[in-house]
Image 1 (cartoon, rainbow, N blue to C red):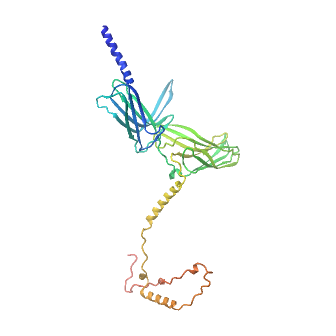
Image 2 (tube, one colour):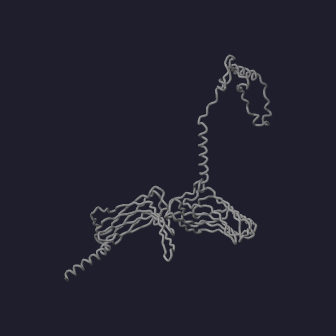
Image 3 (cartoon, rainbow, N blue to C red):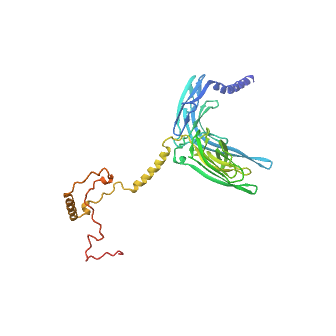
Length: 428
């Protein structure tokens, strides 16, 4: 009986200590990506790195693999009361943008024995060529990219290590759609209780739609206050995060920059001639993801005491490629001009037809008469007085070329049809 108990105890201790011993045999499992720690990637680029495995003693390994993934996730909970109970609704949606696996030690049914010491396994994989989505972290969702290493050992749990990396898809604001000016007008009748106090109107304009963080937006606006109270004009840059799951939308708004103007008195008008509002360091716009969107807006508004504010919204796009100092607008205009020129080339033949030969227009008799008249007129000519040449105009000094003139216009047909020919009927 004692022998059976000792054997059972030994078996249990070995079962408990085996994973610990296997874990202790792995001194280090690390994942390093080439390049700096804050490296940024985009579509089509190649990610390279190395997996470092340091062992204190010999280790049997079933498999060692690297997995690269990029996933967008939107998730939030909503609750509602049903009697005395609370019902929770779980909203979740996911989109996988890429998933690639590399086998550093393939599981072929046999164990691989690794000696004690340091082992390095380089790896690489390419991001998809199609457009990815910029990395993002929000309250109700995220867009994450990572590399995960899994070490499979017999009679032990899978050892994992994970490292995230950043993806930023470039947004070039040097495009005609993002260089187009944005403008708008809005008006409102101010009411206090049931009494009209007058009308308030806003007219605002900005130079373009696309900007990059750190730039200054000059705001051109006019505030017309026809009410009997003073109003306060303001401008905000707002960020709106939109999360979509199971056909339901969740939004989170935040003000990232503020501009306050001077008080506009009753029945007065205020004009902003390029009031500056600076864009703080914010993330780029995310417009290509189906479940997560990040949008920006310039909101010009007027606070009217005793009533709701009047607000005018102008859309913004936060890009990653700044405005070119030269050639951005010129290139857009030249592209439009080239399109117009292409249309023009289609309408004009490349080789215009040559003019008709002079002999086909003027008969031989008329040519002989004209040449005889020219010779008689140039046979004897008095010597011209050139003393007043310097006093005459430039056009008067142009030599007159005496070429054969074109035939004299006449309404009489020089080649009439014979009388015996039957006239053509225009209705046949």
